[in-house]
Image (cartoon, rainbow, N blue to C red; front, side):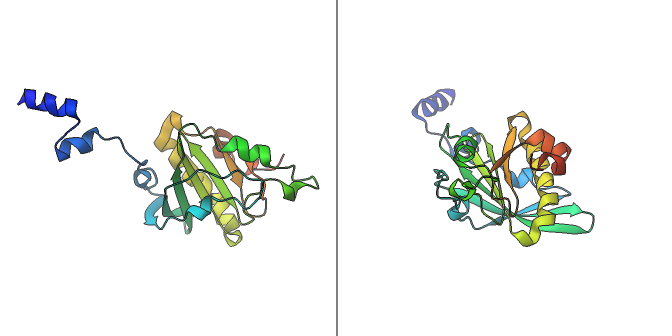
Amino acid sequence: MRALAGVLLVLGVFPAGRARAATPEAWPPLEQALNGPLVQLESAKADLRRFELPGGKCPRFPVREAKAYRATVRFEPTRSLKMDVLIAKLPDGFETYGPIVAAAHDPAGKDFLDGCLMPKSGLSLVQVEQYLLAFPTVCSDIYPYRKSLPVVMAALQKFWGPRFAKKFIYAPCGTMFPRLVDVGEYLKDPKKAAAPH
């Protein structure tokens, strides 16, 4: 029996149960990361267009497949927000933040609208290894979004531990500017860390 198992191992043939155990997780189990007393997650339909930035100068993300979720985030004892959470796979070594920030122009400058812009309704982006997470919103949810995003970010940081991103792009409703924010500072004081400098 041991000899047969050795042959199967060399040939790359495994019984069905063993193959599942040996195969690495294809997608991070966000259902586990974002299911707790403050966040509940359910699957939604993925739309790759949600990863396209509106500014003509913005780089395009090489996204070929994505998953989408709808998170119910309780940000106050009696209030919650239905938040979209999208995750896409990127090619190994692809870096999201640098090209976006480099293509953006100073929001106080006259050529701001000619640079890379974020959606006016709001979008935040977090890259963790080869995965890009997007948190789009709408302006009618500006207050609950600002309160709910730190809850989701804290849950993701706890899930990924030291592998989680140190920075993320934060662009709530109306800013249109891809500002890079330190995750640790943001989670300590979201209002202060996200304030324009």
